[in-house]
Image (cartoon, rainbow over all chains, first blue to last red):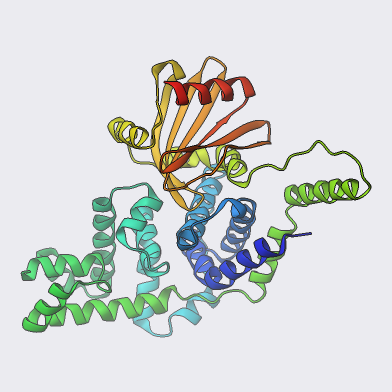
Length: 167
Length: 222
């Protein structure tokens, strides 16, 4: 038996953010099956703590933080298997050659840069929110984001990277 | 704003440029082209990140969260107790406060990761926050093992880990999170209280009521 108000609030939040949470999990794990486990385990933890959450504006960043912590907990529990490319996902997300390049480049980003970029693009969070969630300074987050974009641009257009280094 | 500053801003977040940056891009052809390339990359990123969500996963995840055996047991216990009340039985049972319980869950499930994730924290910041909240952090509390900040219950908490004479204890200073009265919870072998403070509240989590009472008294009296 669930308390209706509590249940409804949780369902609303899950409905609103589930796709982004799954995609965040997917790009952390880079594997569909691990991402499914990760997002399910994260929601179990979120539900356990849901009643204590009062600041509704913070729900999204709170859920992303739980997914990230669960991911790192899982990684620390066992050596992460080498990510296996999911052909279905790649085909649906990137139809063109440039899209494939971008997908590969995203997979090859350093973990800290990728996490910051995913939180910004998928979560829509500001540098300050990302810094709080990652336990890093805002300056460090800005550096990670810049590096991530430099790598992506370099990968997509090596000539363009020279312009970026000048910036 | 000059060209260099604009390019730096674009590389950090091309979707959140301020009016000054946008005005510069309007004036400067080279930077306008740079911004257009950056936004094209963002569109590509959106498409690349939009992997398809497996059909039915949301429903499975919701179901699994609802069927969490720990919570099922808790609700089963609550239902049993409600039945007993209905039967006129005297129940000496008090529900755990959600925030205090969240404090216990934090210590059990998240504290170690929060410590690994956190950046070094300045003790002066903690002291300043404590003063603002009217909380004393006397040395008699115990040996300070860790200070940092972390997300907790939808707010940023000042996280303190102590080694006291009675065992390990965790404090979570929660500025802005007001609490009208003292609340408590007991779960997973730990005890927690959330006490009101000036402009916020403080959660104390320890493994014994003795430790909890001593810390609470010290925080109030200094």
